[in-house]
Length: 428
Ligand SMILES: *[C@@H]1O[C@H](CO)[C@@H](O)[C@H](O)[C@H]1NC(C)=O
Ligand SMILES: *[C@@H]1O[C@H](CO)[C@@H](O)[C@H](O)[C@H]1NC(C)=O
Ligand SMILES: *[C@@H]1O[C@H](CO)[C@@H](O)[C@H](O)[C@H]1NC(C)=O
Ligand SMILES: *[C@@H]1O[C@H](CO)[C@@H](O)[C@H](O)[C@H]1NC(C)=O
Ligand SMILES: *[C@@H]1O[C@H](CO)[C@@H](O)[C@H](O)[C@H]1NC(C)=O
Ligand SMILES: *[C@@H]1O[C@H](CO)[C@@H](O)[C@H](O)[C@H]1NC(C)=O
Ligand SMILES: *[C@@H]1O[C@H](CO)[C@@H](O)[C@H](O)[C@H]1NC(C)=O
Ligand SMILES: *[C@@H]1O[C@H](CO)[C@@H](O)[C@H](O)[C@H]1NC(C)=O
Ligand SMILES: *[C@@H]1O[C@H](CO)[C@@H](O)[C@H](O)[C@H]1NC(C)=O
Ligand SMILES: *[C@@H]1O[C@H](CO)[C@@H](O)[C@H](O)[C@H]1NC(C)=O
Ligand SMILES: *[C@@H]1O[C@H](CO)[C@@H](O)[C@H](O)[C@H]1NC(C)=O
Image (tube, rainbow, N blue to C red; front, side):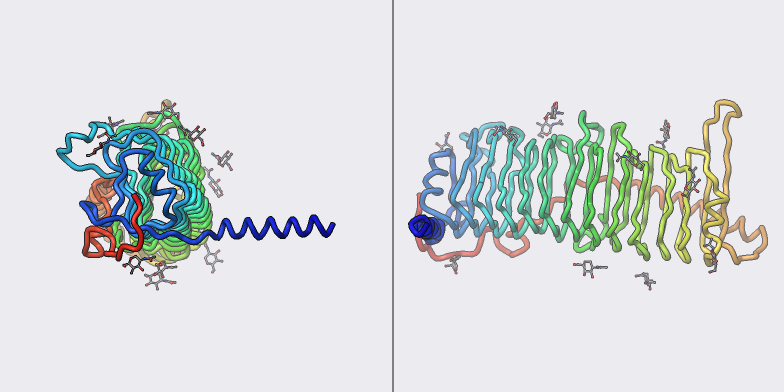
């Protein structure tokens, strides 16, 4: 008994000594990409992995790197981890060809993680990476494991994803962009639907999800803050046959508008009381909504709306419901009974096989305005003209802008490379 305890103690001591091996700080030489190690082959990566735990600078995977990139042991990169290429470099192949990136011990990247233009990339794995100071972009990879990542300024993924693990991602201060199709080509419908889950995400500046989805889980999302992307807001677009239940149970603040498009079969946002922004839903699935807002800006519901109720709504800017399905506008109007005067239109147009075209409409200003029919007509005309203008504007706004790339770390910090560090140790 005593012997075994002694052995256990000895073992634990040895183990803790090993795991507490002193951190080795390596500072790369200053070169074209600032203080950076530039690697072309796995054996160059191995050399760095053998002698360093922290890189006081960047690690650049150069354009002619092919195959797998495996970097154990490194815990901190105080610059960026990125793939780079030089234009007009005779050594650079036409097609970047790293296939896997595996950084099992990495915990911190102080600047950016940029693997954004590698069509051959299949797997990207950084399961201990907790924090990235600026941008994360990992396009094309089929399996992405960033399960420990908690925060970044920007997050971007674009490609034919199969697994995307972002279990711990809590905050993306500027913009989160995820698109599950190659190049996010607008006309493309991916051949598989993807179930997206961001179980910890709570605050984002702007969030854009595009592609083909079978489910969306954002259970903690509470604040789409706007930040520097004040006009992007919350955009969601899905194509393909799936019908989704969209529920954002904690969302209580959105800046920059909410634009949702596709097969939306149910929609709930129960924590939202004061919708100070636009809400624009265009659904191809049958949708009957009851929305909890007390105050709202501009609301537009289009497509196959079968019901819309606003039991708590007291004031709003503009409310438009324009359906392709038979819709009980009287029920909508009744649910608005306690509101003050504001513009409101509810109408539907259906293609009925028996009676041809049938339409129904309700328009006017909210209850409590006992004004003459003439005035109502005037308001209606104004409202329709206004709607046309706004619709056009909204349509143009809702295209996802891929060219809206974030500024580089250097642009923001006024320099093109990580801060200059004194050389403490050289590794090659
Ligand atoms: C990669 O390119 C660099 C220079 O651009 C060259 O020195 C190196 O030999 C190349 N490596 C391979 C594996 O082709
Ligand atoms: C990529 O990851 C998947 C799932 O984790 C694994 O099954 C597959 O073998 C990996 N492929 C490569 C090339 O590493
Ligand atoms: C996407 O990936 C799946 C399997 O991972 C594959 O079956 C499908 O063909 C891919 N689609 C495209 C457009 O590459
Ligand atoms: C995506 O873009 C790359 C590079 O521009 C191109 O080679 C590839 O064919 C594109 N893929 C699709 C599906 O459009
Ligand atoms: C949303 O987040 C921003 C930035 O963190 C903060 O300034 C703002 O107060 C938050 N708003 C709400 C309603 O939580
Ligand atoms: C959406 O909700 C309906 C009704 O609650 C349910 O029947 C359906 O299975 C749900 N769909 C998905 C994709 O979860
Ligand atoms: C709703 O938001 C608007 C704009 O921010 C503000 O003026 C108004 O006081 C808010 N109403 C409530 C009840 O918080
Ligand atoms: C409404 O649903 C029908 C079939 O149920 C579909 O053909 C039509 O495209 C949908 N409307 C819209 C605006 O998507
Ligand atoms: C829509 O939902 C309301 C409230 O849940 C319900 O009373 C109404 O019958 C529904 N309408 C349709 C067309 O399903
Ligand atoms: C309008 O307000 C009254 C009194 O506050 C309430 O009893 C009634 O249910 C409200 N009607 C609607 C449609 O919300
Ligand atoms: C990196 O180098 C800079 C400049 O010498 C130094 O100030 C900084 O402390 C170094 N970083 C670490 C983690 O030692």
